[in-house]
Length: 327
Image (cartoon, rainbow, N blue to C red; front, side, top):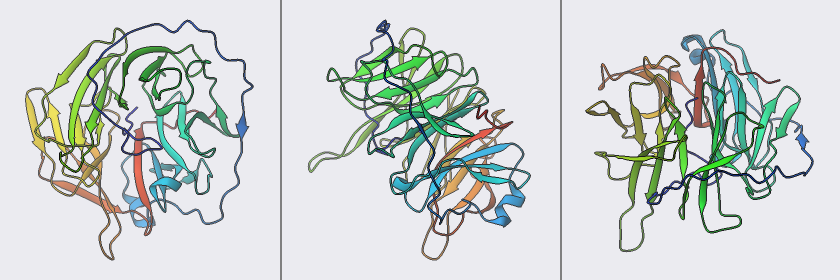
């Protein structure tokens, strides 16, 4: 659905200059599927306060949250007030996730490197990877149950974006580059990709935004007002793409429209139907992060919902109409 461009390396998003669409015909690796059921660390707490729970809009929200970005776990939060923790990692948490009615796929760093796992009622179950894929990062799932993700260099020097029609289907490459890539689903089989060059002692950081077709690898570069940003949010029914630095100061890019969100709010997830977006403001001294609702029709206004739990860092969210399958 609406996944933020994150991974075990939260800032691993970079420029893409070379497009390639090639089919992967190598058979799946025959390594056994692993299932991991982790026990809670005993200190887990809901990512939002009771006050905020009572004010959440309708639907089911999934939050990636924890005491630090590197030790996050996945939570399911319903507008009814029901809350449950879906993963129970310790210091090496869940790096990112993608959620849709068909299920949830996470980039699980429990082993020290991101592995693609599916979340089930019995714990996390690894997705089978072809022998040429290596690891998978930044998973994104759309409303059709299609999975897209990045595979870092394994047998060559390229970072590759891969597509699966379903979680266990054969993967194919639809884009590759020598620099890291992250992605988020939009409509009609397209993904938004944020890429960036990092700052050096002599140069400033620079970011680019592209829309890439998972069907044929066609790339379209989009103009942005922001010169540097870290991630993007899109969706099947979203009126546009929102890009943002981690610290907030986001830009909405619609049909011929560029709007700036009020600082310091940063995007988390579009509403399932696209009528507004869940946003977050970073914590400040003595004050936790806050959640709010933003719409492009009133771009300078945020309707505050309530605070996140004290000491909790929310790094990603997905907003569904109904709960994702955990079968």
